[in-house]
Image: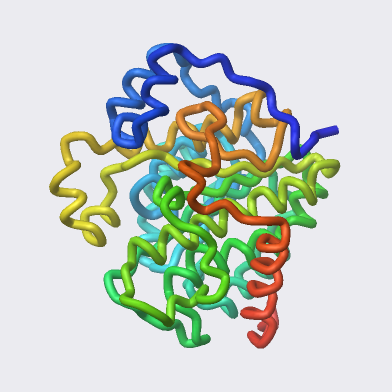
Length: 332
């Protein structure tokens, strides 16, 4: 029995506590280097033969996580948008894992009809799902609207994991023990839910703000799923990987990338806590939490982004409304 409100305290070093007080120190490679001195290597052997599904696996952190999952012996499935990149990654990971059970599904996760279709395809083809990692993201430079009328960052970073996760939860429950890991961003610390403008129609558009708002929403969903699934054998966690040197960061926020370049984390460092959450004992004993560098972290800083229970329920209702008019495609 897992309680959504219970968590086991993690004993932190003096250095960890000092780093936690500084976003720059905590999120950079410095924070990882200091904290990781006391860690053992992540043991992914428990995933052998288990079905692991990840979105956003063809580049950056997701590619690193997918590589480790393939090497663990897991039945790796990933969702990708680009067929060539997906096939290249499948071939590469099969070579690395000496013929591992690796395959992919194609979907543009910015379009909800595609998310529903791919969820149905996964449910049709996969009798078990033990691990779901919602990792795919976009960070648009300018405001873009999907064919279904949703702002791109909101659609991809929040609505897509909402639809995909809710669609797959019954299979995860059937496969329990199972875990859901939502990859968020420290940028959420500066943003609230913006419930009156989820599609960012008002004000001057900033991609980084749209991204952070969506990630705040995903953190809220993590807590709600954690509470709903507390007695199901499925745990749900969120993690922010720190500031990682990825192609998306270089392209979408070039000034930040240029200034912080020497201090950005490697994709291996960014992937560490995702893999730890997927395999370690401690995350299996609690749910609905936020983690960074293998420790539970606060969801808010300086009171920014706090929401009420009513706000959480309203977010859920608004997300349901935004996808209600999208037809469910015929599958399989």
